[in-house]
Image 1: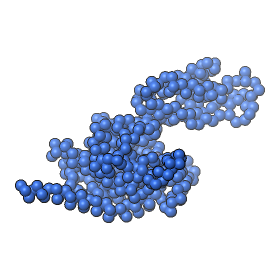
Image 2: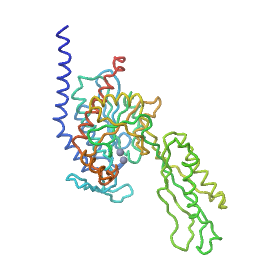
Image 3: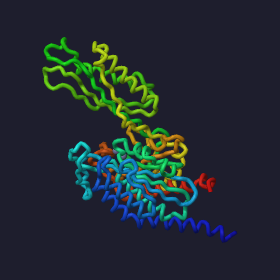
Length: 439
Ligand code: ZN
Ligand code: ZN
């Protein structure tokens, strides 16, 4: 009895020492991978080389890998006996932005977008960090495969920035052709939290995102004879003003919602009244009810103002809701609480932050919305150099946001924290109480 009592803590200590040593030893590999990925970003729906690289990373560890799942999606499966199935997702696409970080490893890459225009490309949303942490986590989990049982589903998802990738992978049979997860996990770098920190948001964390086009039609003519026309520019101005009252006067004040008119185009010359004006809107919300209410109000106002202007029905505005809808991300509260506790052990209580929900969008939410629903969590990984963080905020300035040409994570603490946290999160789920029930 005495011997056993001594042996157990010793075993734990040795195990932890080994684990820490492995990540330390592995870091140079991960930094090279990160810098390679950072210098070779690819635009959404064109992530061919990136997908190949991710497939190769998983294959080399013994995962069963399937490529081209919903475009350039990659699925890696590692079966390690009976137990829970845990999905870990990375996204893979870059953005059409010219990098301006001054780093030696800054991207100099350009590629043609789908319309054939040459664009500079940058990993300005940190998906290169996501992929590096994803690989590092896979390497840790395979290294430690004697410490867990269950199935790992690791997916590299394309086209997150266009909101199409998760849907494409699900439509390609992600949860039918491959093991269905009991949990879905992902992370996103934060351009506000310091490297070394992780952040959690319980419940709604990121918003429903809709893109809406409105074509306002009028009856054009000479600018000197407005009475002979129906001016769509005046109608557009009225509509834009009216749209502001949806959030301020129609949606309940405690429900988050955004209606932004991001683009307006109409007319060609001072003295010509145009035939039509085109508007482009982004809508944000959390609940499906608020989303529906906002869309219905836009349609109603567009029709109502056209009626008031005396336009016939066939000239009413055309309101098109784009089908690239990204649903809101809901972090399962119990899972969030459980992973917050894991984080406190792994990075220390002072490095675990509660992050407020944002009206940004992420298509990770799709993986949890399938029926029956799957508990899912995306958490924030701090990436800002603590020195820069301190100086910038002390000077009253703003840090570069995600999608900024100046956004650059501090690699070492970000990647190491990311791998430690994601590995611990997966181990906790794979070795949790439900795994005992299944055996
Ligand atoms: Zn992004
Ligand atoms: Zn992103």
